[in-house]
Image: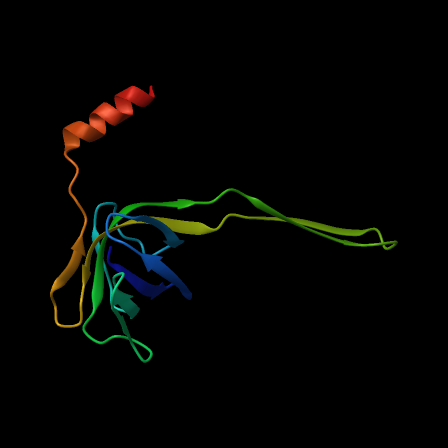
Length: 130
């Protein structure tokens, strides 16, 4: 099982092909558009690992944007005792849902690729949930 460690939004993620990630929101892209992550820290499988210093040049991860959205509201409440001073604030963090399609090694060969789902299977799954 091949994996890669990518860096995006100031965070690092260990990803595998056909995995869905919730990351910091990417610039205003449309759903089902392709994304390329070039900041690869390491990649490999169970037996061997290629580690960069700090990045692996030439390696990349290809993904597809599923949707952009907002998380649930987080309340920030500050109170100073005995001073009748209170502040209540809310925050909704923006996020992007991304599906990993392919992981490429530094020489350009494909390490792993997501299996394509047929659209008819997706419709059957949705109808079963209802």
